[in-house]
Every structure is written in structure tokens, then in C-alpha cells.
Length: 140
Image (cartoon, rainbow, N blue to C red; front, side, top):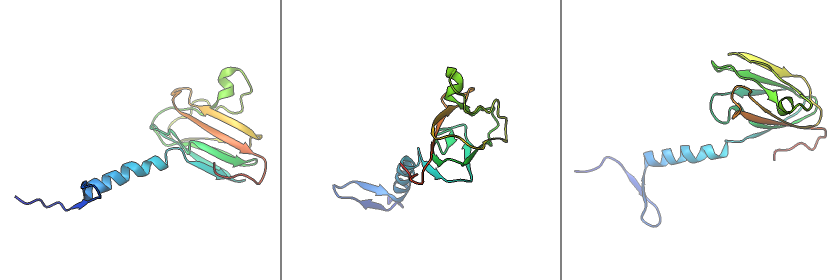
């Protein structure tokens, strides 16, 4: 009985079929996009809310002062975009309150600093905004 699959033999005698190669490529390529960093200048940055990891996409954003940020919730679930300072009783930079399906929440401007945030309904959902003042913004 002959096999219809063609195998490629790698050094050391390991054999891979085309399908195994495609599956391997798909699985390993996702490792490079799990925590993207987006550089944003003055304008509006979009962050998409999801029901699966990384939950906020992009999850980590470095942006310049003057950039507006909008979170969009295309899911059928209730979420929030709540600055960590709101739960600790410190300075609360932003809190969307309940953000329903197809809802949008926008923050017009933030002072320089680090702004970790989360969803009050699903605390595992977390993201961070890094707001910088100078032209030296770059991907980290």
C-alpha cells in the first residue's frame, strides 16, 4: 500500500509531511504576535476587546502625549476598561463603566506615565498604556 503523502526528510532523519509543516508554521508564528507593542502618535488609536487572550489587542501600547485611545467591544459580553488606580483608591485616570456589545469607549488625552488597566467583570483581562512626552517613542 503506498501513501499519497510526500515527506521531506530533515537532517537527522526526521520526516515531515506538508500538512505537518503548515501546522507547525501556524503554531509557531503565533508566538511572535502574542504581546504586540504599538507606537502611536497624535491621532486616535484603536484597541479591540476580545473574549480570548490577549483580550485587549494590542495589549501593550506605547503612545505619545495627545493621542486619543478608543476601545471597541465587538463581543456579545459586557466588559470594562478600568485603570488600576480606580480599584486601589489612587488616581483613577479612566473607567468606562459597563461597556456593552458593540460599545466604544474613548479617552481623549492622558498625561505621561504608565496606565495598567483591566476589565472589572473579567479581571484576567489586562492591558497597559505607556504614554510618553517626547519624540523618542519607539517599539520596545
